[in-house]
Length: 151
Image (tube, rainbow, N blue to C red):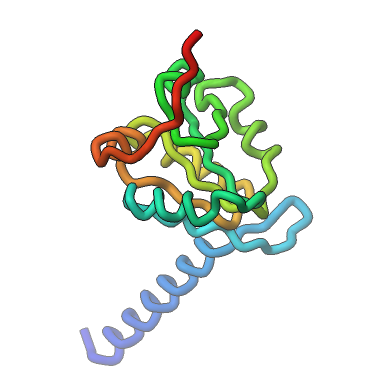
């Protein structure tokens, strides 16, 4: 194979890679308009704790716990909102949230939160964060949980 052919193949592969990366950055809505999707950021638990503390009084900041209500009641991050990942209305519940707000999402170990942030990105959310290791690592690092109410 000649040097020219190798160069052309490399050029085509580079163009394809750039096109794929660009497609990952944008998607089209039903009207055909291009919209930028979220780039999900992962925060270490201690960094997430500081981020949450820094945004304590920010009305455009939401901590989203996607565990079951029973898991949520067993201990959750203070001021978290619970939306049950296993509910039939889960995707619609997410879609009803304000997409311009900043969200920190967690579950127990990461499977549900990972799925959730992918759904949120497809739905057009812009500022989405996940906590690395979710509530299991949060607890292991002895970060604070909301006080549980005694019934």
